[in-house]
Amino acid sequence: MKSEAIIADLNPRQAEAVLHTEGPLLVLAGAGSGKTRVITRRIAYLIGHCGVPPWNILAVTFTNKAAGEMKRRVADLLGQSGSEPGPRDSGSVWVGTFHSTCVRILRKHGAALGIKSSFVIYDDGDQVSLMRDCLRAQGLSERSLNPRAVLSRISRAKNELLSAEEYTLQANDRMEERTAKLYLMYQERLDGLQALDFDDLLMATVRLFEQHPEALAAYQDLWRYILVDEYQDTNHAQYRLVHLLANRYGNLCVVGDDDQSIYRWRGADLNNILDFERDHTGCAVIRLEQNYRSTQQILQGAGGVVAHNYGRKGKTLWTENEAGDPIVLYRALDETDEALFAARTIRGRVVDDGTGYDDYAIFYRTNAQSRVLEEALRQALIPYVIVGGLRFYERKEIKDLLAYLRWVVNPADSVSFKRLVNAPTRGIGPATMAKLELLATQEKTTIWEACRRAVQEKLLNTKQLAAMEALLRLVEEVRAKTAVIPISDLIAELITGSGYAEELERERTPEAESRLENLKELVTAAQEFAERNADGGLPAFLDSVALIGDLDEYAEGRGAVTLMTLHTAKGLEFDTVFMVGLEEGIFPHAFAMPDERELEEERRLCYVGMTRARRRLFLTSARQRRLYGNRSF
Image 1 (spheres, rainbow, N blue to C red):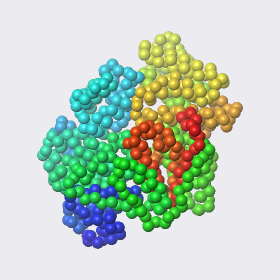
Image 2: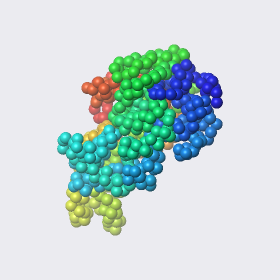
Image 3: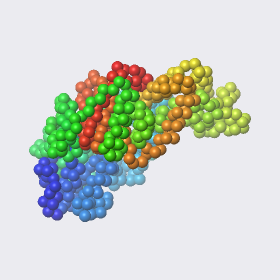
Image 4: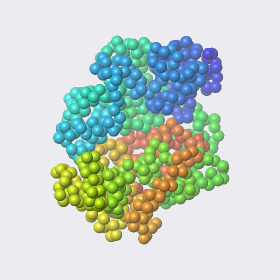
């Protein structure tokens, strides 16, 4: 294949990145600058023009979708099948995620570390289950130490390549010492089960290469040309893995954008891309600054935000696209006005311009913000779909609290009881549940009465008895207040009285924080329902929620407005984008305000959101906002 054909439709900087094949190369690819095209053309050039065997090329990215797209494009360019065989097959480049690449390596060479080739990979649920076993074995309760919180700390340690033994040596407070003991037991049990978690895949591969130089040499010789996409998102373990593999031949090309590094909370280290030149003597740097996606107005606005950051390489995006419409700033009266503005604007443009609903997207900082947006879109009969998350009333924590409310209203609702009885955990297992249901059936009574009898006759063990007594007392107290206090107060009492909030607060993870925010937003929803329905009580509120679920199905298909968090939006693009909630404390998020590094990440997140827009961008805020049950000004 002639090089002219490969680079024919590339701009000068893109072509330079494709043709620079030897030695370390940092490609700083701005948003919408065609980085995937550069990566795939570079692979095609290495194979088709330079004569590099396909199996000597490793291309690594972060998602299976991105890996699949790369394989498809390379296959189209080279006229090959794009299949994914092993390293001895000459028909394909090795393209995959970090984790899938490590799995392949460990299946073949893991025995050197005592890992059988038949090892299983534990997902999040498996890990939580195993950690619960570890907590019980050490005489610890989930109330004193949340399993997800422990796993989060262990994950951070593994990302830093700290073994359980190394973490133990570094532990310097009571929490770290507890975590260290659990880490040791958790890892011992994983090993005994011949199981690896996702962090182990990276950590074990690095350990394999560090402890067994012959294995490292084999893969260094195999993968003489290495390409890494989204390099700004790599953590320390991934950084170490890449540099071990590239150390022999030095043909390492990393592609990324320091201005789009938004996963620090997940372990990503921005310094990996900022320090690439320091780590690689003689490194070439190519900036892809021509944007093919957005208008000049949008690029200028986005660039103005991220320009305030100090931790960046620096680049200026430009485009040959039209200047476009000015960015619209809308200051709403409150969150409802903000949502109605978005819905009204979308409907008006669809009618006037003939655009489709799928040309529009609404981005927000936290999932809890979606509720009022969903309600505004439903009222306007605008179909929508939430990407990267469930609709507000379909989220686990919301369904759990609604189950409490339904059991308050209907003591015979055994389905709701089964959902709430272990939310949070009360130690009521399947066997006990079966016993309670059998009792209700035999006595021809409700599940509520069966629970009362089980308590009175002490049919449960001591721990279960105490938990069930507390649960029945809570529900009775709330039931007695349903006609006296607002629905929002009933919900707030259930959130705290059930121990649900306490459990999430102990977890101390971003996921737990988001779930707690969603519960507080449910309080807001109840407040707004009461304002709209002065005579509506708890049953009416539950009816309204149930109807929302029934009407949501039509929004699942195509031709719908897309709702998503800003983190989820990365890598996507839309003709028109609304970014809502641009207020201090929401976006930028409250936790970022005292920390300059966190504030810079919030700016990068804003930049990512703005550069998703092709033609029009709306930035909205509210003079006052009720979120998480509180009114802010």
